[in-house]
Amino acid sequence: MKSIAHRLVNAPVFEYLIIALILLNGAILGLETSPNIVRKYGGLLSIGNHTILGMFILEAILKMTALAPQVGRYFRDGWNLFDFSVIVFSLVPATGEFAMIARLARLLRVVRLISTIQELRLIVATLVRSIPSMGHVMMLMSLIFYIYAITGYQLFHEHDPEHWRSLGIALLSLFRIVTLEDWTDIMYTAMELHPMAWIYFVSFVVVGTFVVVNLFIAVVLNNLDEAKAERLHALQSPVTHTEIIRDLRNTQQALKQLEARLDRVPVREADPMSMTHG
Image (tube, rainbow, N blue to C red; front, side, top):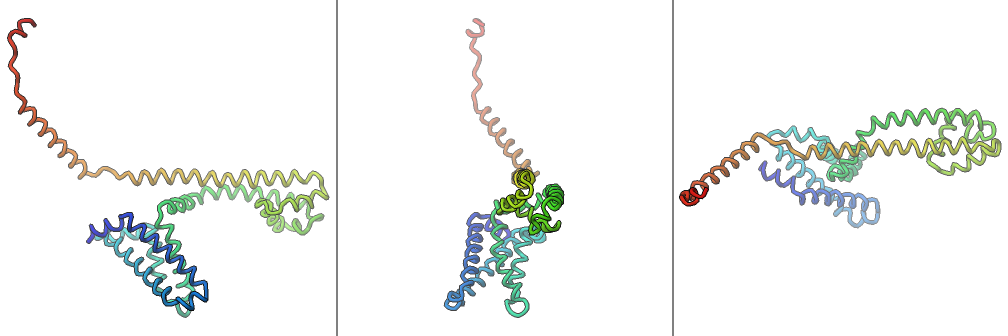
């Protein structure tokens, strides 16, 4: 059973089947947003939901069986733990005070697509490991925002109180500017008072948008390269003692076969004439 389960869960067809079930579950959730479809086909949609949940439960059982008797290894994988949690929450009755939890659990089944596709798992792992580095970039960005917010308040709060009347409003205005959402309107209003105010806005756009945002991208790309390198290293399984013994035995057998072939080769007698000429 363990061998069969191991071959089954590692088969590409099994992975494609789980992906298809997740996509089908997402389609069912989308169809349930239409009252007319629920009125006509609500029973079929409910059967589909229960069938897909049963398949997910069967998947978890197969993965645990493949790791038997060390079933605990299943829960050491964060993605397996996430999948198991989705199954547990999906078993909550969709009635009463738990109805919202049950609906969210059904929605989490679609999120399982991330845990199923290796490339998506790699991207999520990259984002998670990028959080510490992003913290330093956020500190730099916060310092830049704070300096520009105080400067903007001092320069423009009397002329344009709508955008600069307090530190909090100034920060919101700077956030609007850094997203490049109609920021020129704020700049032109400020230029009515200070014609050279464009220097303030253009410098903030350059520093805040192009420099800091590119720092975020650089951090993510750097961690993505490291995550790919770790994944390649993990795929390269170390040589086991059994494999070394097997290779040694194969080498010994090859040497014995070669020795047997040499024994069957007749030894030619030396030619006296050739020895004389020599």
